[in-house]
Length: 220
Image (cartoon, rainbow, N blue to C red):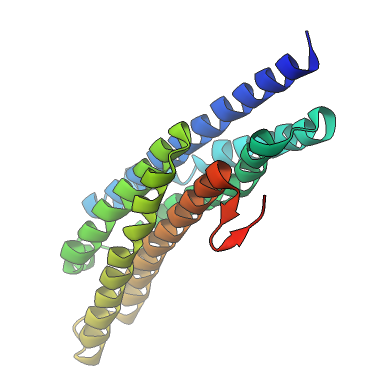
């Protein structure tokens, strides 16, 4: 087998593994967010144990990507792909972490307090799920235009987070919510907002894979 074919095979395996990791992170996020919405404590406990596989895949992919760089010495677009994957798997891993974090916070919330914020947090969840799904789809196709759409969606998440903070502040001022419950709900909202940030980061690395440009800097 020639050196070029060895590189092609290694990159195809790497892409397959990163898509598997992305699908798993997305699945965990959807399950964690649904457990929060439904106040499903049993599901929340189960989700907290699902993050190990995401972590394992991140470690495996990082090792394989570094091996490709060292052994195959890829050039141009192949090097951008491997480098971009090395970067974006960190964000995928963080998304998996936040799915577990949301599940943990769910265990601290009663159904009564959870429902106080459901209209806003549910909207955040809808946008976040679409962002993560779209970033995964953009990754599969290395679709820069789809990645740009993911980035544009983040403003709505930030605005909704600000609304959650404002509403929670008013509830606290009027003694209409227990402070501990307020902290847990705000933490859930912050984790949701952070998932959006990581989806944006993934989208930015997808654009880099296609163009060599990260944000406003030409790296390749």
